Every structure is written in C-alpha cells, then in structure tokens.
Image: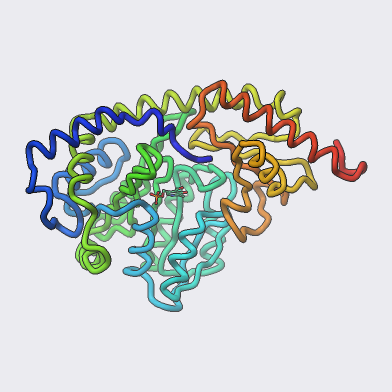
Amino acid sequence: MGLPALDEFPVALWARLTARRWRRDGAALLGYTDARGYPPLREAIARYAVTARGVRCTPDQVVVVNGAQHGVDLLARVLLDPGDAAWVEDPGWWPVRAAVRAVGARPVRVPVDAGGLVVAEGERRAPDARLAFVTPSYQAPLGAVLSLERRLALLAWAGRAGAWVLEDDYNGEYRYDAPPLPAVQGLDRAVHGDAGRVVYVGSLSKTLAPGLRLGYLIVPPALVEPLRQARGASDLHTAVPEQAVLADFLAEGHFARHVRRTRALYRRRQACLLALAPRLTHGLLELRPTGAGMQVLGLLPDGVDAAAVARAAAARGVVVTPLAAAAPGAAPHEATGGRGGLLLGFAAFGPEATRAALETLGRVLREAAAALPPARRR
Ligand SMILES: Cc1ncc(COP(=O)(O)O)c(C=O)c1O
C-alpha cells in the first residue's frame, strides 16, 4: 500500500514536543484560533513550502486543513457552481471526482500519459472548465511527472480561461532519481504574479502519517478571504494543540530531517523491491518504476485479473492494490494497454518483509497464470 513507514515516525520526539507545549502554553492552547490555522504553524508552513518546494507565498495565504482530501472538498465548494466543468485526471484520485459531483459540478476526465496530464486533450474536451485538478510531482496513481511544457501549457490555458488549477503536490518530497521539481505554484507566480491561478494542496499524510489528518492549502491572494469564510463555516479550524506541535516540529528542523532520512530509506526500499521482484514473481509482473513515490506499478500478463490476484494475495496476508481500485471507473489507457495492473507499496517495508511478500505474490501469480487457457499462457 502507499503508506509511509509509520514505525519510522519519531514518536518519542513528538511526545516530548507535545509535553513541552502543554507545560509552556497550557490553557492558551484551548481557545479558538484563526479559521486559516494557528498563526505560528502558518508561518512555519510558508517557510517550508518556499524553501523546499519552490512555492511563492506569505503566511497569510496558508490555510491549514485536515488533510488534502478535506482541502479538495473545501475548494470544490468555494470554486465551483452547479453545472461547471472540472478537469480530473484519468486515471486519477477518486475523492476529487466525488468532491466535484457533491457540489453539482461535472468532472471531465482528461487522460494522462508519460508526460502527465494531457493538457491539449483537456482543452479539447472542456475549454471553458472552471478548474483543473492535477498531481504534477507524481501523477496519482501512475507516477508520471508533469513535463515543463505541459506545466506552461496548463498555466497559459488557466490564464486564458480564467480557470483555477488545483496542484496536489502528492509525493512532491519523494523523488529518487533526480532532485524534486519545484511546485507549479511558483511557476504560476512568475507567469501571473498576484493574479495567480494555482491553489497548492499539501499533505502531511505521506511525509509524516495519515492518521494526523493535517494538510494545508496555499491560495492566491484573491482566494484568502473566501477560503477563510468557507473554512470557518464548515468546522471552524483544526485542533490547536496538534497544530502547535507541528509548528515546532517544522520550525526546529525536525520535519526537514525526517523527510531527508525517509527519502534515503525509501530509495533503498524501492531498489530492494526492484531487485527482488523479477525473480520472485517469475517474470509475471512487468514493473514500471517511476523513480518517485511509494508504490510501483506492476502490469499483469494479458488475461490475468488484477482484482482476483489481489484477493488471493490478501487471503495470504499480502496487500496489493489493483489499479482499477486505486482509480475506479478509469478508461483503459495508454499506460497499461488495457492490461491489469497492481500497485505495490514499498516505503513501509524492510527487505525481509518485501522478500516474503514477493514470494507469496509470486505463488499467487503462478497459479493465476496456470489457470489461463493454454493459448494465453506465456
Ligand atoms: C493523490 C493523493 N493526494 C493526496 C493524498 C493525501 O490525502 P490526505 O491528506 O487527505 O490523507 C493521497 C492519499 O492517498 C492521494 O492519493
């Protein structure tokens, strides 16, 4: 699964920072705060996003949310009216389509290829869309990085159409084959200045832990007030004590260190998976590593059903995600040539667990391949 290594989370340090905050601030952590979030956390997030992700912003533009999914839901409500079209990646992250539909707007599927979202196709299908959702650092779930040419084309279209671009910087920190690319948001500020069209969506779910439910939006100046009102009207704000601890964790450099350490660890773990998989899965899984993220896509032989393989593996204690489950309803696409695919998570598992899981998966794949009609066997 695309989970980070939760056993690498610095629990003792987090507990120390939490105790220190309560000792120092006590009841001062128990009142209301700005709907955009606890001010010291917004400052720490802005500093991090500027230095580490190439975002251009002030703390004023930061809105703390309970994870990316919450942020997307909030943005759909603020930016879309019933009947509006919104580009969504195909295949892509299903909560986006759900958020678009929930406000009565219309998700328009735009295909992705090795260069990420096919912007020209989006323009052809819905030139007047109000919004485009994109995962430029790591296309979810296939892993492509949005090319510079497409980034510029997307911004040019957004400027012409007066549309918003939702940049979900999913896995932005976890690139192994090259330095991480800076965010599209920074490029947008260079192109459009204060009239920026990009809303940056950040999450701590992959860099720290999904159970914390902490994320942030960095919005253009024109959207600060609408977002503050919408955030206040929904659940007012995220709990202050957790925000205060995260502010210290960021400001004191622990976050940057944790990301550096886990990036090196995940690079090794991916290399281990890639080295072991061909032999242990008997050549029945064609891996498509992307040099980024926490999962590798493996394509199955023609005719082997990904859902059935995943069920059989789960029955033996190994969890793999069929591509179709990660992106339900996606049309057969260029990336797989219509073949079934499995997403294999590697970040959360050391070498022994990876080897054992691949041995089990290899047995399941052999059985599935043997059950194919003779003409389809390889
Ligand atoms: C594309 C994408 N963006 C963001 C996230 C993080 O979501 P959240 O912050 O709501 O946990 C995920 C989680 O799997 C994801 O798949």
